[in-house]
Image (cartoon, rainbow, N blue to C red; front, side, top):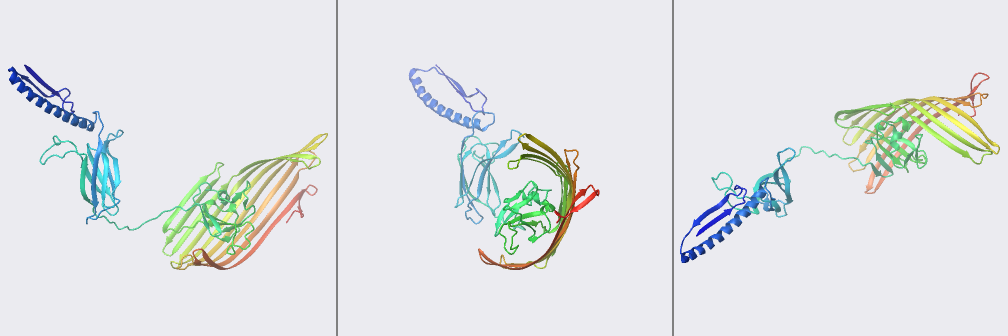
Length: 550
């Protein structure tokens, strides 16, 4: 009788089809001896089956843990423990994360990736489940006021003392108690803290709406007219005329009247625009009917030396450039800024109108093309003296100069609609002109802030002066060759001077109540002259037409 026993392992640690246990038994015994041996063989076979199952289970786990071998890493690991401070007190809300090294398919290098994470409870205990039990893991613990802790963790059996290489035999554990983990105190004294915030685009401040426009890149390089196009409740028409509640508002600069117009103030110099639809006596009791547009210019009070340069060009070659410079040292603050802005505007328009109530009815078609070239320069300097932490004296000056040339071509076609037919006439008018303006202002101020929040006393002296002149020629020709051209000229000039002295005191009485007292004096001197001339072919010169002159 021959008995052959053959066991084969599928473990990745053993070569494929290599017999783990293989032996041959040759027997030739009588029947009663054979029966006894058969009982022994049954027990041996049962033990061998148990051994095969154990080896197969270990082989499947090992196959999942090695790259290139089929199977997945079982995510059944469970880590738990307790986090305390050096005195043994529980640390709550500590961040606990588990990382594992994996191969980056792009860089072909090992990198740590997040497996699971959590936080410690009020008693300092933490518990993280669903972790892979094969391979080495890294536990990272961090908490405010404590030094971060990194600890290597493995569910595999650890090698015995003095043993080199991996441990032999044994199954990985699925639970790992890390016990009590003590964090070291790590307190660092901050030397300085900087808080940076962005101003809201709009805010309500009592009787006014304040719009922050200093970061508006859409209007950069333009004028205050371009800024107003992006301010809600303010309307700007195609000719650049600004209206508020369907009327022309008063223009203020830094809270005081000014002779400057919106197209004389560069957009880069504006920090905020205040829309005041119901102004109090602090600004102007009359309010101008529509209200006040108060333009607040930028002021730089950063310590040390700082400044900036900027430049731009529009699609028609108009150049704009500017520079700002600021020096803040001890109790003095000096600021200076200068800007130039070229304007090369082009305007086209058409009007198609039928006058139904005329007798006879008329149909008028107008086409206009306007070309404008020119520019202006804006300069501003200022000095602030901080006498105390609560008292400040300021003085600043503004200078503006601008000159623009324009050329217009207007063609007018008029059809008179009679019953017998229509009679048409055609005329064209060319306009050439130039205008020039100069303005300057001087502002002095005093401000004292009281210990109570919101209580302050201010005094301002404000002087603005502006001068302008213009010269325009009109040449109108008609289709009828026998009709002479109509030549006109308009000359204009004027000036505007404003001097204001004002002092205000504000004292809060409650959270929503305050009292304001003030005194204000304003002196204004305005002159505007316009002279209309018609060309007289009899004297071959322009003759003043007093009727439309003013």
